[in-house]
Image (cartoon, rainbow, N blue to C red; front, side, top):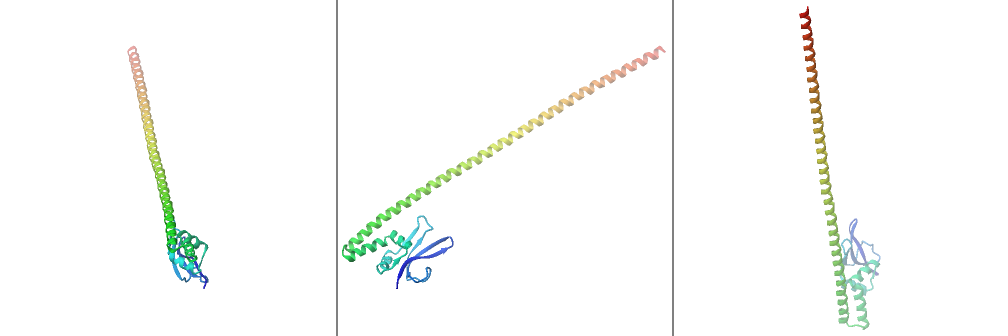
Length: 208
């Protein structure tokens, strides 16, 4: 029975994750499988890969063929290099102890590289957060500045309107005072004219 190591899709739409399985090559992609070897979740950063390395090596030794994607995952987790080292042991080129030593050294180097990548991602995330905070602070400061400018503009408009009202009231008061003066002058003239007319009538009466 030909066996393939491949991915089996799980998860919801838009956020899938995958089981790494050993399955009959004739079975459907998401159908029955012989053994679950691990999980691959591309939704995290970096992607999460949990693999039973010894189980994968066992199937590789039994002739299982990985799909292209599964092969990359097996290589990333060291299953392929362990399979290669065990092949050297079978051929007598290495002892089992030497193979284990080489594999453990590879794992340590790989873990260091992954840790460095995670650290770099963390620094990048912190830098992005700092940039976002600076941008948000600038936006808030602009909002405060705009609000203060709007308040100052409104205060200036109110002051101008008050000054205009005061000027209008002063002009009206001045005009009223002028009108009152004219009325007083006219009244004085009328009184004078009436007095003159009265004096003229009295003199005519005396003459008669």
